[in-house]
Image (tube, rainbow, N blue to C red; front, side, top):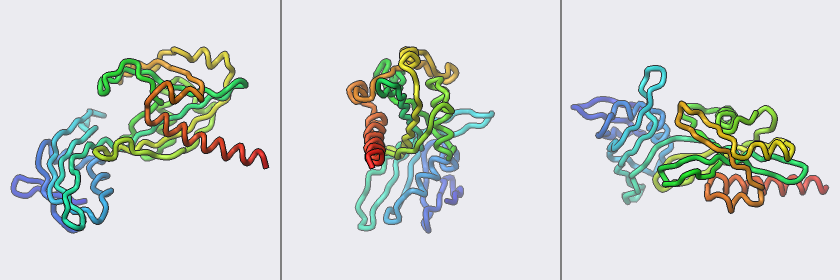
Length: 246
């Protein structure tokens, strides 16, 4: 993707076409990894005619302003000239960690409870998760987020990549990578995790651990990450049992 300033407007090259980009903080927006990733993901049958940057949320890291979220409105048509939904919220990839604790008695899943104004919920239970920003190593991000949000030691278990999901593909580019972490633990240690306070205060994380039995998970939360990871784990468990029976 190439960008240029032309008569007060910005233009970006999408395939062979020069596309006007207008709106807020255009130069910052089109140089962001979020914008580049979205442009490069577009199917070859899509033609972008114009892009408006409607909102840019930034964060300062190492004295440098970086784009955190983008909201754009694009004029896009398909190969038959039909208009396509063009309002897009760009936030990039993230990870969700399905922490499974095996005890001699049963299996438990570790959730975090947090206050989420976006959905108006207080102490909403969900899987530990975190944004990837420009990072590309999914497992490393999962290891970091697990340690920060649960205070559990990832080195005491095994990480397995499960799958990725798009929770709201009609308007948001977010891809969530789901990671399974398994470790063996005593019933006493599991009980001691219940209600533990965690999170990074500097990032306004005020979290509480909630440990539930695996079979009760879907009744405890409507978190799409948890439900998707649960289904993927059941598939893995079925395959394991099949091999053990041979």
